[in-house]
Image (tube, rainbow, N blue to C red):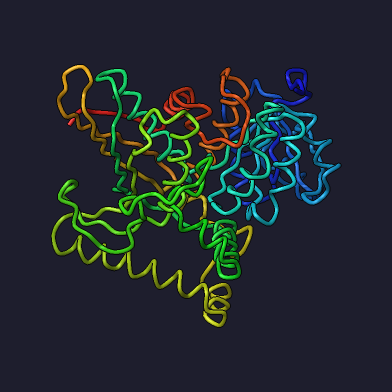
Length: 418
């Protein structure tokens, strides 16, 4: 097993010149905890890397000396050389299905830890099939979905279940996440990843099968039960007292949470039920908002499969790669999700209902995501994470260590009894 303890760097940020990559770099430049890290910027274009470094130096003069490293996303030898110089790689080069596979393979070969912010289920399935066994052998922790996909969901469930175990014994047999607040925009990279999944699913029946399977990311995928299927329409939830509609990221997050349960050895039970929805206030206004959300999401997904309509969307509506919300828009953003868990107390034999809240200020996909991704890398590098190698999830790898780190970074992670 390769030894990374004497590596030249603690962190290398790969894709530092992209929209999200620059935000992660800025977060690291400002972050006091990151100042003890030996880190470097990496990409394929030195001139663009120098521009990023100049911007960082304006935030933190020490960044004027940041090393700049070059590599090619399709050249295994250059990536092997890059990976050998660090303990942890942060990757922001979506669409990962197009640009990310060789770097994951290099980290697995080199026994180095890796984290990204992908939400591409079909690509993660390929990485599991190709690399999980070897990553266990080399000790590489490959941790996908370390951004808004899927840390609030994955760590929110983990925190809720830990509270249940510590206070009541046992576990919550059912957890439902509902998004109560969200304000943010899209970048060209996010749009490119979404369109990549659409293209692959349109061309390949197997990809469609993977994307539609609630247990697509389980070590051994199974079909699941009807209750585990993603919500497709508008419903009124008596449990929540709110109107609900499909949550655009639920088809990613739910798969990640189920993989966490499996990798942890099913502490929440093999029949654990988990679902996600967007939720809206009761009453006519809430119902109409839920209907609009559901219809709009469905219409958009259909439109991306119609070539003439998609071309117009890409030309006139959707941001191009490298584009995204302005600094002011990112600052105004926010999100809040609530998770309701139900179980039976081992200590008293009585039913238990818990509610967890996960929230943060800043655009969820960019300001909050850059914080979550950077803190995940720092957690892997410095917090003594004991998890073994493999293609993993945030909760199954870093668990409460990352929850505590994100709390210190200003995010809300709370649990209360209902």
